Length: 289
Image (tube, rainbow, N blue to C red):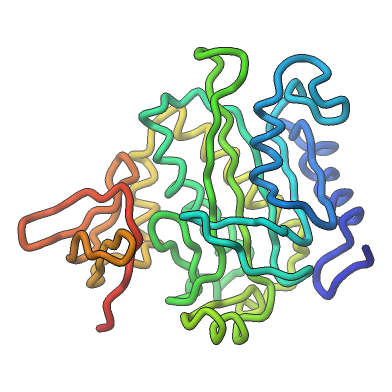
């Protein structure tokens, strides 16, 4: 596949990523690939992680040390939260996933969802410079440009095949719009943003590297110290802080109140008439001011 506007060919993308994440890295990634198309990069990495034993995959078996990174110019069955299909065409979105080993207990795995969105947003803000101040996080992990969605993050886990004490593999995927914001906004009937809003000319391979490294470092930190140290960082980028919001489940309003950050378990805190309430699941809708 030739280079697309703003997006190098898969071979060029893979070479640039390997130069930073494998060849020149202090703690290198075990595998870095970029392909023209696949079904879902998250699904591909989860399947690889579930393979058992030496030679399970002669090229990229489960014995290849993590982290792994897999990106694609096109995902035919890419998914967002709640199983929603990811709207994309070749070159219109930056789509990739990373797989990491984690020793977090199952009860602590839910913190990875807000963690992944937060540090991805921090990395993108650093890349974008001064205009990046408009980038924020909508709990649990949507990256927004103001109130318009720029990127979605999907976190999935699977138990490692060596046994109950082998920990889990966490796969974190991100899809970020590179263009087509106006068309997507009309089609989806909600505000959508794309990377052109930032005016950034940073190479997209560097964008991928910065986000992948942010995920790696944040996972190590949360394993060591827990999520409490990220609560203040989330508040600084919180798109829901002080806003009138509803928590929905399949269109039914479960809770209504004001957003007031996240707690040390990564749960959304909302202030209702009955008091403060932690929310761990649900769709969040911001009510018009």
